[in-house]
Length: 260
Image 1 (cartoon, rainbow, N blue to C red):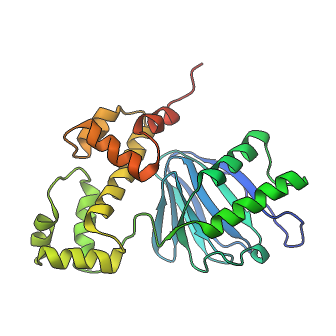
Image 2: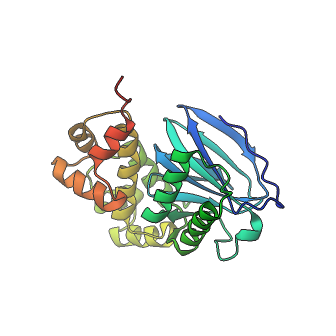
């Protein structure tokens, strides 16, 4: 894993861009930086621990970490990701708390161009303008507390844990409410209150996270759909495209090794 760069506050760069690669089962010990970090996966799933909460970020979403916030990283699978370091002085208008930000196609295109040209610090006037667009796009991005939020609430937590163990389980909210000894209406209310989203949306996001890991391993789309409880691949493909903006086949091909 690459060492953290020194980004002195007096440097004239509006941001620094690091493209990093994590092998499976990588870990980075807890640390804090004097600058903010915008982390997003180019492929794979980011896992960052912040204040006892694990933030998961599949492609299309970034994890925002304000300056001086301690965090650690660990990944079960292989991850290729971008880390954008933004000086504290440039963080006005950006979230004060860690969160998940939706990545725009404009931001992704600029960072892909920086990676292609090997730009770590944008020094030319043209590249500095592009860097400012990245920061502006982050300010305008839709923010979520977490892509796949968790909770320690004693009624809801066991239900979420069971679904994470078996993401392909097709039984509905009524079944899970019964296992928790509550009504379906109460379960749905708990989801909105503690997760900020509906039961079905949380379960679909869980399936996206699981699917990305399977697709990165090169597993066929039909097999992934079946394992995640979909009766037809087309239903899985429609859900995946709606939540990620790309087809599962595109995600799968991205994770395959390059031909010799």
